[in-house]
Length: 114
Image 1 (cartoon, rainbow, N blue to C red):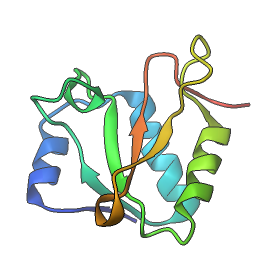
Image 2 (image 1 turned 30 degrees about the vertical axis):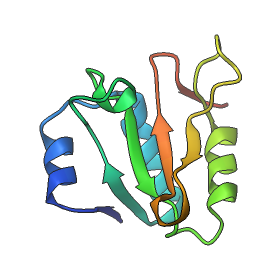
Image 3 (image 1 turned 90 degrees about the horizontal axis):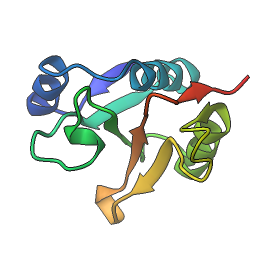
Image 4 (image 1 turned 60 degrees about the vertical axis):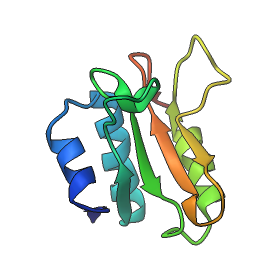
């Protein structure tokens, strides 16, 4: 089940178009692990993926998973961020201590591995 951290995050998701690849990644994550908490969506002043149009960045709570690093590896083993930039990853662990989260990102070249 997908949960939203709070009303401000819900509004940021409802009021902005999101990249279809990112939507597919979130759906896959929830179908695979059954617990996805979105903690940050669109941020209008963000210079990165959270501020693009369509939005290409979203954060999910990491501590709901018993092993977040394993989940990140699984995401990156399943999804290719950009075949033109093979060192770039779809999922990244960001933040410190209680602020740790999984940042998910996409681009027009993001695809599920075959």
